[in-house]
Image (tube, rainbow, N blue to C red; front, side, top):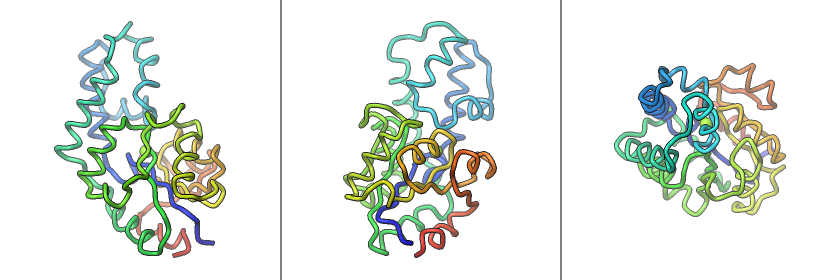
Length: 214
Ligand SMILES: [Mg+2]
């Protein structure tokens, strides 16, 4: 059955930004005295909003400077404005959903400024205009359902009639908690892990239209 709306995660689904962000995080944490590689940063923090990373980091390196998360977000936004790698086939998949007359929204654990920079860099800002949700727009970030409930409401759709497209465990949990059908793009996280949290895994953006019944 065709969904009433399709709600997209950004990082790892539309933007292949995780490794750029992980490299920045790894560089910052190494400088703070917690040496790590980009791959280790991914394993530690994939899908988490920056404020949710802070307690893990402080447990390791001691108190961070006030405003550390905000400064990190600005740094990431600057880098994303410079270069946001696209997930192959993702923008085309979004446009295909729109062409079928189905509303789309983006729901991300990124900061608002950072998310806007990514949407502009990907050329998707007009496609998602008015339906771009950062964790800063809701009370609680993923894995809580708040952001997907807000995105579904913005599309005038009941959550159970929406499909969420996610790539991380916190994101899949958020979509499932909201009551949506969740498709898990197995890009950074293995299929089995996404499926264990309630997603239907898939491996290529070319499959998305078929999975949505388009
Ligand atoms: Mg993601």
